[in-house]
Amino acid sequence: MPASEAASALLERADAWLGAVIEIPAAIAVAAEVVILLGSVIMRFVFDHPLDWTDELASIVFLWLASLGSAVALRRGTHMRMTALVARLGARGRALCEALAVAVPCLFLLLMLLPMAQYAQQQWVVLTPALSWHDSIRAAAVPTGAALMIAISVLRIGRRGWRPVLLVIAALAATAVVLRVGEPLLAAIGNWNLLVFFAGLLGVAVLLGAPIAFAFGLATVAYLLCTGSTPLQVVSGRMDEGMSSLILLAVPLFILLGHLVEATGMAKAMVDFLASLLGHVRGGLSYVLIGAMLLVSGISGAKTADMAAVAPVLLPGMKRRGNDEGEMISLLAATGAMAETIPPSLVLITIGSVAGISISALFTGGILPGIVLALMLAVVARQRSREVVANMRRASWRHIGRSFAIALPALVLPMLVRAAVVFGVATATEVSTIGIAYTLVLGTLIYRRLDWRRLYPMLVETAALSGAILFIIGTATAMAWALTQSGFSNSLAQMMTSVPGGRWGFLGISIVTFIVLGSVLEGIPAMVLFAPLLFPVARQLGIHEVQYAMVVILAMGIGLFAPPFGLGYYAACTIGGVSPDLAMRRIWPYLGALLVGLLVVAAVPWFSIGFLH
Image 1 (spheres, rainbow, N blue to C red):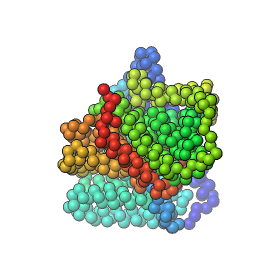
Image 2 (cartoon, one colour):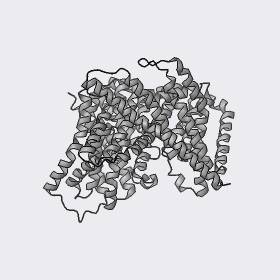
Image 3 (tube, helix red, strand yellow):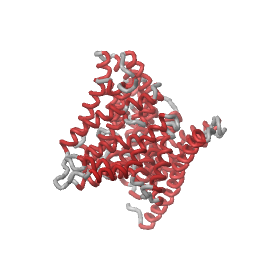
Image 4 (tube, one colour):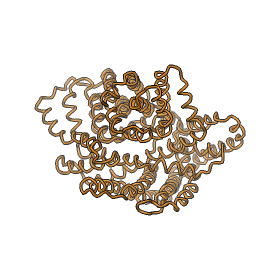
C-alpha cells in the first residue's frame, strides 16, 4: 500500500534532514583537504618549514570524505549503474529492478556493518606516528558511512513502497539458500566457483541495474561466506586500504579543480580559442572536444573531472549544430579513454608507485601515445560528424588573437600543474591545490565569472562524485584481494607468460587481458593487483617498462569506457545527462579507432620512450 500523505511528508522531512547531516560535513571535508595540502606546500616550499603531520591529517579527513561522499551519492542516486537492459523492461520489471538497486546496497551494508565496526575498534591500538591519534578516529569513517547509507536505503524503501522490495528480498534469500546448500559442490569445483560469484551473480546484478560498487561488494561477501572461513573484517580492511590510499586524494581535489575551471570560465576560454581555430570546418567541434580533453587532462588528472570540465561547455553547441546526443557522448567517452596516459594521470601515478617506475618518465612517455589516439579519433569523428557548418565563417585573425589573449591565463594552468610536479614544488597529490588556488585567483580577478554561491554545491558534488568513485575502488580492492587469495591472479599471470610468440605474444595477450580487466575492475585496483606480477615478465622479454605501462593503461582505458560493463562509459553518460542506451550502439567505431591507435603504440616503442633520453 502506498504511504499516506502524512507519512510521505514525514519521510521527505527525514530525508532532507539526513541530507543536511551528510552533505555539510562532506563539503567541509573537501575544503579542509584543500587547506591542509595547500598549507603544507606553502610551509615547505615558501617558508622551508615542512609540517610532518599534514599527510596524516589529510589521510584521516580523506577517509571521512570518501565515506560521507558515498552516502551523498547513494542519496542522490549517482552511484554508477548499468540501466540499458532495465530500460527495455516493462513497468513491473523496471519497478523490480529499481527495488533491487535499493536492496543490494542495503543487504551488503547490513552484512558488513558489524565487521566494519569491529575492524574500526581493532584499530584503536594503532597510533598515528606524528599526531599520536588512535587510528579508530580514521577507521570509524567506514562504518559511519555504512550506517548512514543503511538509513538512506530504508527511507528510499519507505518512499517507494514495500511490495517490490519484499519480492526482491525473497529472491535474494532464495539465492542465498541455493548457495548455502550448494557449498559442497562449490568446494568440489575449485576455482571454477569464481564464475558462479564473479561472472554469474555479479553479472546478473550489474545487468539488472544494481549499483556496481555494491554489486562488487556483495559478490565478494557471498564468495567468502560460501567458500571459506575468512572473517568479513578482512573485507572491511581491504576496503579501508583501497579507499584511503593518499595517492587517491588527488581524485576529489582534481574533480574540484575541474568544477572550478568550468565555473570560472577558464574551460570556456580554452574551448573558445580552439573553436575559433577549427569551428568553421566539418567536425570542428569534435576536434575541439578531442583537443580540449588533451588540454584539460593536464589540469585534472582524473578522467571524470576532465569530462565534467569540458562537457558542459561543448556539448550544447555540438547539439545545436546537429550532432546526435548518443554520438556526442560516444566521442566524449572515447576521449576519456584516449587521455588515460596524459599526465598527471592518476593511473600513471599508481603504476609508478606499485611497479617501481619513475613517475617523471611515465609523465614524459604518456604524451605521445595520447596524441596518437587523438589523431585516430579525429579521423573517425570527421567521418561521423553531422555538424551543419554551411553558415559558419572562418574566424578572423583578429578574433583568433583576441580569443588567444583571453585564454592565455587558462592555458598556463596545465603547464603550471606539470611544472610544479617536475620541479618538486608539490607532489602529484598536492599539485591540484596549487591549481585550485590559481583558478580561484583568476576567476576572481581576471575572468570575474566565479559565483561564490556556487562553491558549496560544487563541494557537495565533488564529495558525491569522489565518494562514488572511491567506494567502487574500495569494493574492487576487496574483490581483487579475494581473487588473489583464490590463486586466480597468479594463474592468470602464468597463463599470460606461457603464450607463444615472445614479446609480441605477451603484448597481445596483455592488451586483451587488460581490456577485459578494465571493463570489470577500476584501473587502480587492477594495477595494484597485476602490475607487480607482469612488469618483471615484460622486462625479461625486453619490453621497456614505460612502453608496457602505456600499452596496459590504454588497454584498460578502452575497457573502462566500453559498454556494457565499463564504468567510465556510465560516468560520461551521467556527466553529459544522456541515457546510456543512446550511445550504446554508436560508441564502437570510436573504440575501434582507439584499438588501432593502441596497436600502433604497442608496435612502435618510440611513441612511448622516444623522448626519455
